[in-house]
Length: 204
Length: 204
DNA sequence: CACAATACCGAATCAGCGTTCGGTATTCGC
DNA sequence: GCGAATACCGAACGCTGATTCGGTATTGTG
Image (tube, rainbow over the protein chains, first blue to last red):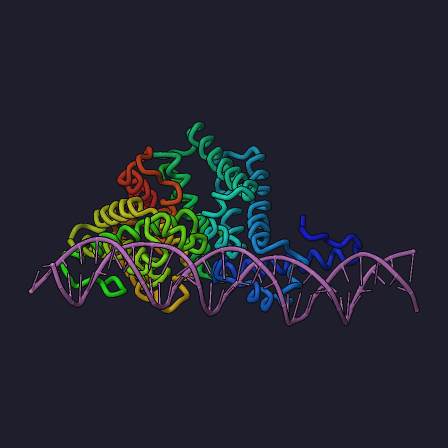
């Protein structure tokens, strides 16, 4: 829910929502490139075409943008992850699907993800980020659960399951740092490669 | 080389260097916790026990601290990596040694590493960071070279060598985010786990 | 058309921050 | 011990940058 009094008239509401999403996307791109603190509101206004005051029709403040960016990143990902985990496919297949969706999402929203990574310390420390934190934890819990079920039914083998999970998180979270749109590898190929490494012990 | 006129008198020079290192270490810790921009100079003075002006006997400015932190992180690591790569052990052994040293270093200097990760966008964009950038690249080149030699002599097998390298970078760079001193796993165990995943294709 | 509601403007404000600088206390080396 | 170098202090400065607010133009709706 956008913050400073979204218009009630339906015709305007559509415009408003679209413009707001546009603003958030622009912010994500700028933040990813120059950093959150390194990006001034005037750079933002320049990039959006709005004037200083105009921005504040769409956001409450600068950090509102950060929250919006994280939400756009985590909400759909978490939802998709829940869908995949709810199906009754074997754990190995669920993991592949999960990682594929995850990598695709992270590549698609790499700007959002870069911002999320950079501002991690703020996210982990401050009050207002509770929801973002719990979304992140929920996603990691789903991953861990899939690995645990795979280990339990013998379809996966880990020297140390927790370490494998953390390694996977590392690989995927680092991906936005180097991936380029139209690069040599597709998101699916990247995901498959990661899965192969994590499932190393498993004979395939 | 520290910046604002280090004392020439030897007795004082020792004190000076020690105090400066102390300041940098404190800064690394604070920056890792609250972010570079999120940490004010007054918080820094509070943590060091110095007063506002006193800090500037040891540093040129705030971003001088960032450079110092990156140097303390990268210089010794790169040196060690070069040593390991210079020995004529088989590539697989070199990789294990490299990753072990790397993980140990990153765990030991996790605050430095967290700062390095957070400020990455600034580091990649701005002029004065050239040296830091080239150190990072040099280290990655050493890693890639070991993997390439292993692939060439058949002692390692990769579905995609570049992806394996990037995955490894991801795992290790992410480690400071979760590792705790005195945690369940030692740096060596972590490193061994990472190597096993990267060397998956290789029969061991 | 008319009048709300809405969209946007942009100069002014205000707080916070990094940095400076004149001064004082302490320390080393001759 | 004397002088010069050094260590440190802390109030003041200047600036950047987020946010505000009164005003104007535009837009949907009865």
